[in-house]
Length: 234
Image 1 (cartoon, helix red, strand yellow):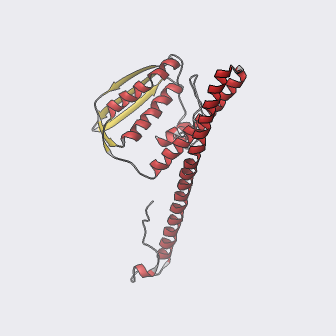
Image 2 (tube, helix red, strand yellow):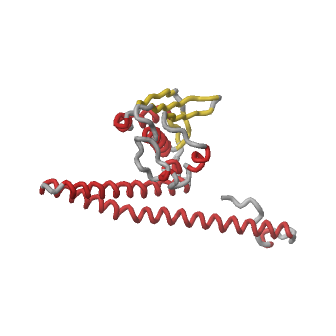
Image 3 (cartoon, helix red, strand yellow):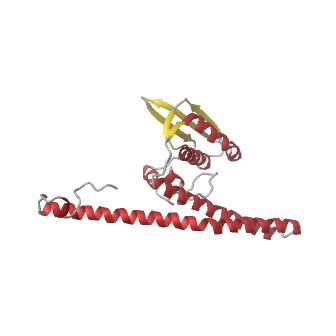
């Protein structure tokens, strides 16, 4: 956030007028500064808290894996094994949430490595990684990938594609389709991910990019309860 008006204080400019407009400009600049400091503070807190949660969650995952392995060798009851599997799944979702929060904090901080990326090749690679998930969900995947180049961060572009393609599979109908398209339109790169899932209202679409909102609107027979952070990262 940039301060667009003159910095406060007469010492910066001896000839500046002392009137209501100047006072208003000083007040507005101070307000922008306070907002910027507040936003930065919240971002640092989210990043630091997420980083601190990484280790205990990873430790818990290891402990659950050891417990599951031990139960298998001891021939434990199905109910005990099922409980540990549910705990393991819950722990894994917590780890995914923490990783997404860290990704979001990194993106908001603007730390990206820009390079030339073959978007069509990247889309093809991501689609291949989700082929098994699509088959399990009964979704037919196809593509229309024209050769296109973009300037961007390859890691973040892959993450964007992964989220969009994963959503196209999850929020779909059994036996539906998911199509990925890349092309140039009047020298502008176009990426389009389309599926046969239920249509969303304009009001809902506008809110889906808000952090954690998507977790409350999971739709379709293939839905897996998400974290509600994916489209914020996109």
